[in-house]
Length: 95
Image 1: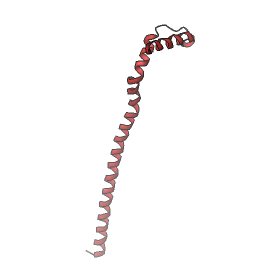
Image 2: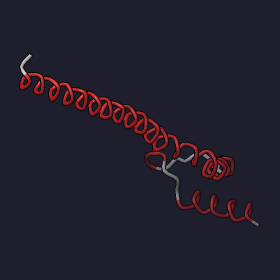
Image 3: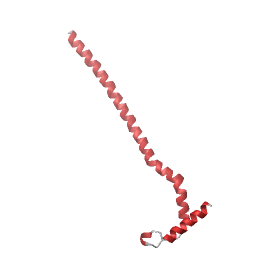
Image 4: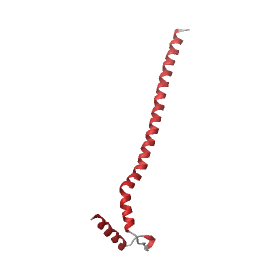
C-alpha cells in the first residue's frame, strides 16, 4: 500500500474516532439536560401546590369556616359588612 494513502487512512480513522467520541459526549449531555429539565419543571409546577397546602390552606380554611353566610351581592362578591365580619373573626382567632 502506498505510504501516502496509508497515512491518510490512519488520519481519517483518527478523525472518525474523535468524531464518534464527541458525538457520544453531545448525546450524553442531551440526555442529562433532558432529565434536568424534567426535574426543574416538576419542581416549578409542584412547589406552589406544596406551599399552598402547607401554608395557605389552613388560613383559607379558617376563613371559609368563619364565613358561613351566603353573599347576595352582584356576581356573588362579598359586601363590606361580610368582609368586616371576616376580619373580626380572624382577629378573634389570632388572640
